Length: 541
Image (cartoon, rainbow, N blue to C red; front, side, top):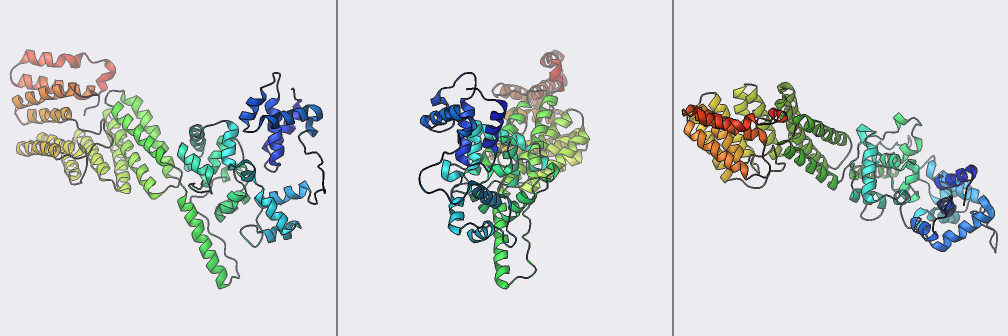
């Protein structure tokens, strides 16, 4: 069945036009699906359109016989309708696209007065919406029309939202399903940011994603913005908070009470909306863990680019609206990512830039109220200060981090860093006490590291710190023993950081020299000399 360009254009317009009768739109889709040089199987078309094979066969045969007149309804027996299709369409268009002058929504009475139709007829027109006819919300219908799964739709909605940086959305399959079901049970209202991202992904208008039931449930501020928004693209962005309801100049006490209740309901609906789902949050934390782990063995420049991109995604989400719990989780992820960027910047020789990242990470930790993140950020800032030769600052950061109640190995690393700073300052006794405190912290440790990788202190890393400290305080035999223990422990780790391994060999060589074993020192350095050139920039952990 072949179509002319004019026929195809008319049929496609019937499928896209929001005011088309849904039966006509379905018939147009059937004809379009059947068109082409090769006739597709009737059953396949019915399956794709979620209809019956007899329905597909009927309208294909009607179009072949009557062309564009075929999909239209034929005159039926009985009394002719007293309400024309144009009157029905005008009533629907007015309901969807205009507001009454003295109310926030159309009632059956006000629409009957406006259209000249009986109130019972208005109610019957309103009840015959897409949900009644197809048992699905319009957002779900658009997704099925495109043949996308929930996961595919979530990915495309998230990607589309990146074109509006201040309104980014992190969608997941569960969240898309809840947006589709709204305003039904177990659903979640899509914010205007979500609706704009959906419209961008589905290549349709926002109005096409909403039916009468949706519009009745929308907050007044959102509905007014959709109806009265300016035509230019730069003005399509929804506000970050609900707009106030305008109070008429002459209002009775009852009116004011009702308006106050409407304002509270509008705010509650806005507060319930979110631009990120729990599954998306889990995925972003998983990506953060992967970056922290990969940094132990990968090129810092490559990892820097990936870490920065993920941080920017989270920053963009934080500029939107989400629940307080989700905001806190985003701040935690952003803080860890800024901490990773601080490590990478310092390892690339940019200590001042690294310090800026560390300060931003600290702000995120404070906004989230997250003690583990606070401790890890202070550990990072201690490391930066140590390599910048601000030893007192390094000491103070490490001791301050140890004051927080934490889980995992951060307390061990903070004690090691304190010992490192004391040994550089020549305070032998304080350094050894700090090393002993690191042992106590490991014995008292509870829970696992939230991120891991570079933000973890495995036993080999602890022994590496001990070897360096003992060398500085004049105990080469103990330093050699710690270095040997570190190398043994490193072989049992699932991921071996080549930077840490190189440092251990260097400490081992220095201890051999201090005990008069020059040949042993040369042997200890052999693995360091054998490192590939790209590993010579290894992070000094």
